[in-house]
Image 1 (cartoon, helix red, strand yellow):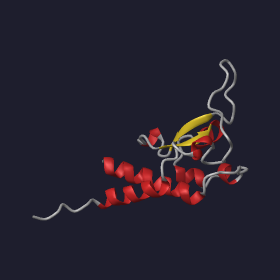
Image 2 (spheres, helix red, strand yellow):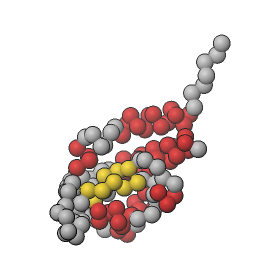
Image 3 (tube, rainbow, N blue to C red):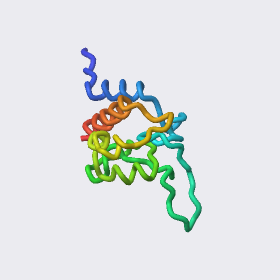
Length: 125
């Protein structure tokens, strides 16, 4: 009897997930993944949405069949990213010109999140 070989996608996905941890359960959930601004959870009804309102940004946009994997993003960065991929957004003028607040996410971590989302999408197909 031979053991069933482990799927390399599952192995890579598990390793990345372990390295990144659960950002929705630690302090990273309180600041924008892109610019680091501290975010407001709620805004007053009937008022315009503040630029630092907390939203969830789909790493792979819904328009490109993205599912589930989200990062915390302020309303302003989420609007600027729109339907762009994370890779396109990280290379955009908007991202390059953002004043980065502490503690913003490191670019290497954002690239790992993009990899995690791509592996998750590949595993689902």
